[in-house]
Length: 159
Image (cartoon, rainbow, N blue to C red; front, side, top):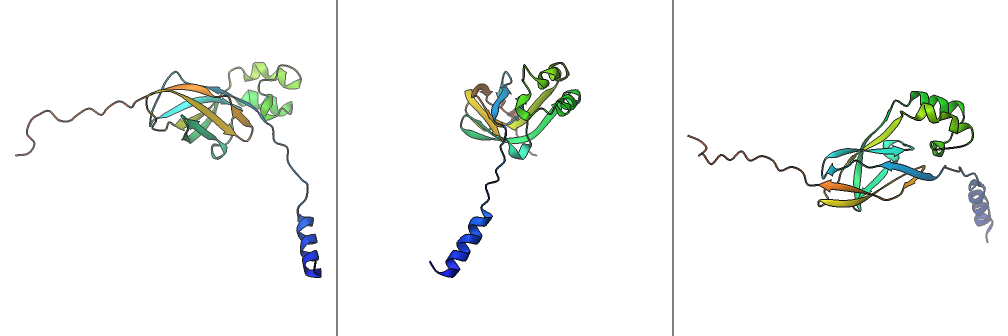
């Protein structure tokens, strides 16, 4: 190995540190609505929630676009979890400091709004993945969009 190669190798390996961040991984709690319409938007309960750019959802094997996320009545829950240093996967903790947040979190609802892909009517599996983990597959009942009413009365058009 030439001196230049040795110096380059040393410089490159020096930059390859061993710092790594351990991310929480948990099974996401997914709540599926009774029925959704292909091509329309629908709200799915999801806990823990993440940022819209971080969420990947598939319905029937097709990507469902993330429209937005929402947290409703979660201020007391978020405050309790912050004060007790709860991680993202501690939302369903039944023991320890985070379990004390159960009452504060009882009314909290977190959801992701998805654009349902154009799949055929029927029951399709949905899976959601983001930085904290993955949901178990669940079935969602997809119906066809309502047909547009016809404007054709049979009468001639024009003069």
